Length: 109
Image (cartoon, rainbow, N blue to C red; front, side, top):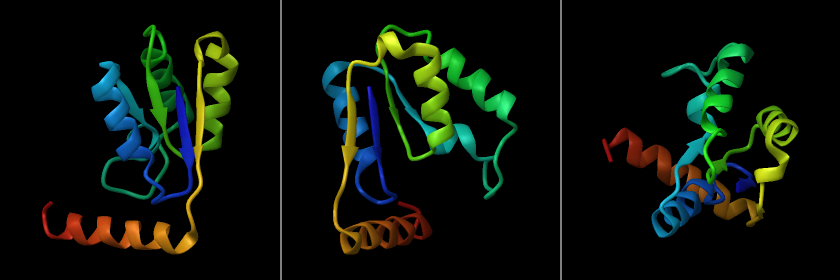
């Protein structure tokens, strides 16, 4: 299952809730794509290796915005993608969610 949408639309929240209900693992693309603690991309070969290791599972949820990763997985594992969810909420709500998340992170939550 893929969950895709703009930043701040609730992808991670929905993925975590569905993972709890169905007892399946979640891959957050932000954690795969970015070098920890930076705004720099990891090397594509490392990203692809991590994605390959994740999609060997029978059921999974991948959530994120990065189109290259989604395209990569669709080309590798299209037969196991049973659902694609696109979340679209208004821009003001996305901005509110992003700013709220940043504030919570700064306060150690």
